[in-house]
Image (cartoon, rainbow, N blue to C red):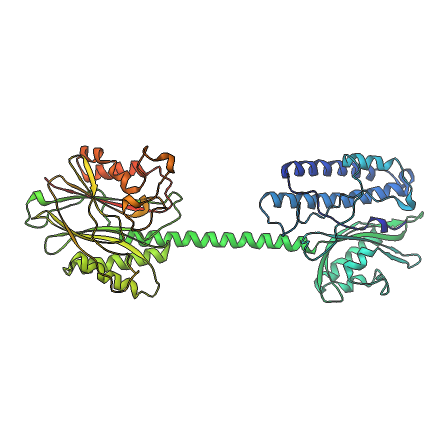
Length: 534
């Protein structure tokens, strides 16, 4: 049988990127047509079909492999596999959209009309793209024939390039070919050759060969024996494709998937730990506890309720906190704050700060001095971070609120169906400046007043941490100005009427949850509501 030297080529990249789904559909339809031609030729005898039909069947086998790979590459590209810089079209397609090779002797027959019909139309020839190391998935395809009667071996130029040999070196005899493989693959190829030559079984096998320069290449071989008139094996032909880059890309995709799965598992484990740490630190009470402050009159009691609002994704657990605690002198600590960052580091830092706040408040340290100590603690922390906080001390007998803040939104006071933000004392973010001073302010409260402490996660991301409400950015764009409040503070102030109708702090918290529950928050937030008893 004549050799298939004309069948070798360097595969080129397919057409440029465009309608990938249409390309995939066309490729699969083309693959089905070629497979139909292959099945049709496989049922005819050699006497009826002759050598040209065997040649056609070999071409169909090669086309099916090429189309299968092309379909896989297009699927990868559609799913987001990045292309190499400067490449147009689908990276890695081993299919060459060249004119089908002519049959041996340069003759043309009607049988090639069937193959052309399977392709839909015979494309016009075009130059193959140069095979360089920057074209990651382009395959070389070479062919060979070993004549067992004359010991003649014919290799194509591409096969020499695949094996790293020159024409001066000459082609490899069939019995020497397994010695060029890595030791693990040698027995398998030797057995495949034996099955092909003795039992007439076709070869369809992948193996790794070691080139003279030491490079290891992965190649895919498809071959068949050629029988003489007596049924004996006269020769063997094979088509060999270099699929090294294709397999390397598949391994890279697999490794990337494994890495993403590991990272997802670690992220889930970290989130669980952060949630558990947060739940162990924030006040365990649910509903609305009442602090009666020992012998203080019932009118001085505070009705309290709080709520934690997760981010829209639910995956970010930040360092937000709230707390309310009755102190030994009968006053009440009210605090809320936020530590930069997310995850275990943020929640562990939040736990440290909240523990320090509780300890200093129990020791009787005033809010301004407490903020100074917190700033010093943040400044000397092993892991630098920034934080904002508001700390209030409520005296029930006088109904006075003494408070200080560190770059945090001020408490909101609601009275008589109207609300306002308290005037902010001076105070910078925690951890920004060493030795910073923090002012205090005192506010006189009345029976029925409602205080709302919240973290800045309610406001849009464009709102600068610690900026006054009137300097905050627009939440929903300029076109939304005048139709709804622009910041978290303004939206809370817009609930003044509902707060005025509420009978408990818990009802106020429910109104906040309804107002902000459907917001696309990028960060989590906390809200603490304190209602002065009348």
